[in-house]
Length: 164
Ligand SMILES: [Zn+2]
Image (cartoon, rainbow, N blue to C red):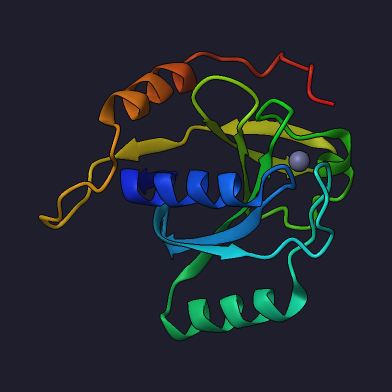
């Protein structure tokens, strides 16, 4: 999955604004390229759970269809846990065809990872954060952080199970 620095920053900003509760949202686009991040309200308003507000989810799905895009991923944040699906994330993964994007704010720079969750199995999807395309300037205010983040993404850390 490919996304721009601006979209990455929008996800991190949404996660920070919802903290200490989990944030959630949807990403949509074409093929593997994310074209828009749709922040949504967490109906659970919880630091450990999330549920997209159904009315907002409906509106997002409708707009994505109108634009002729596809739903690519479902996003949520982990304010205190690592960027790995929790047991509940795995048990309640209702979208086998969407990448589950998780931003962790636990410590240090935010970390974004993506996973397919199918039948209780978790498989990591590489998330590539690139510059803006079609001549737009990147709105990322901290390119080094994104570079650090990409370095982190290269490490295979699927074995990590310290998510609570
Ligand atoms: Zn989670």
